[in-house]
Image (cartoon, rainbow, N blue to C red; front, side, top):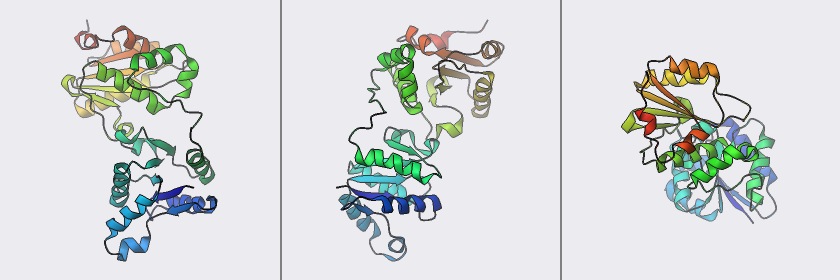
Length: 274
């Protein structure tokens, strides 16, 4: 049976409610561990006791809070021990290097959180999520272009990772912020002083002028010379016309464009406005 460790902040009321709900829903012979509040305040050799407790579990659930050093310590130790990690939190708060782990959106609806936890704790395979080999970026992009079901099925983080692997394959050094959604862009190409924003839209939707204005504002704020928007869908005519009238260099790319310039991505930076 499962033994589960939950890492959370006692000051987080919603996190406490999730823990109590999970404790009530445990199956017979299952064990749940969590940091004792009194242990944190008065115990001796706290870290050693935490590590020993985490060693006992086969699932590590983290109600994510990157401002809490105890949570970050426990998560780091669990990662080092190759525990089965399940993160609960807002996607924008989770560092990029952790976004491949099982992730459950934080919600005030405790039942929804428990349902998602049960899927991960009691199912060997999460059937509604396809396993993607991100390094096969060209095949993945072709599938997104050709298969509407594949585009609908993959998450935003899956799509972002596919684009990231594509850019790496173009011999570009890519940096990403820890909280890209709060910073107004997804990747940064320092050699070109260029921001990259990735947009996953349904096939019937188009990228509008508001998206262009948003990245333009971020470019001004960061004193960046160039921006690139990569989208799963087309761009509106107003967005295209707006970009053409700008002094700043903003390039609009669809997935079809990525396939055409695969291996020659630097041509994007060589284009000059007339």
